[in-house]
Image 1 (spheres, rainbow, N blue to C red):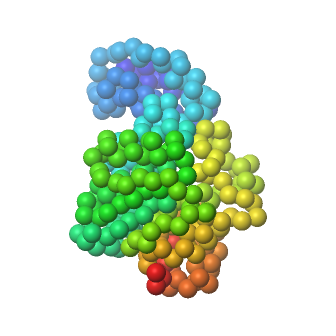
Image 2: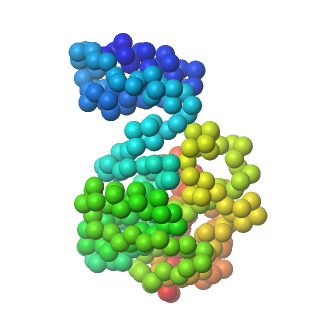
Length: 270
């Protein structure tokens, strides 16, 4: 099996940094054979991998490995992902942790996840806080299909609903959490092709002349006394200033583990 890992790394070394090529190699092996990295290192009996050349070719074209296999592990959950949904990021897990750490986990709080995508935020919140009443909304029918399946897979009871937050108004809740589109089109030049060519643009991009489009709309609704955002690191101060002008208080800009301003919280009299 070590030889297979070395072969995969060799095939990917011109496309990915060495450490990432190794991670991908072990991921492929475990996904296709069930053999873990530890077992490989212990000299587990070699096996052939079905469709290995196809998997490698897709990775050489920068198709995310989560899309190749159709799922990912995130916050202890197994989640289906498709090109209709974003792949859950580590910083989004930090947002979930922040919401949980700063609220009563044992009260029947009503939570609304706007732009739910794969349902990762809603599912993680409900999984960790079963007493919370969680709803996930999205404009994409395809994303909602994935979210619903993920909810069933992870055995959580969540209400899923199609909603265009730019034109529709949700019912009042206790907490709104959202990771909305926040990348301007002019930032495409700095993005890796694995994101630009494969992940859903409707979940990524906002107009160049209105980067706060979704933040401002959601904040203006004032549909919850507590609002948590994942944000574009370039617009942390702008999001905070916008919320302050709308009457939000106790506004907090939180940095992720990489030191980047990626989350904002604010309170308002809803």
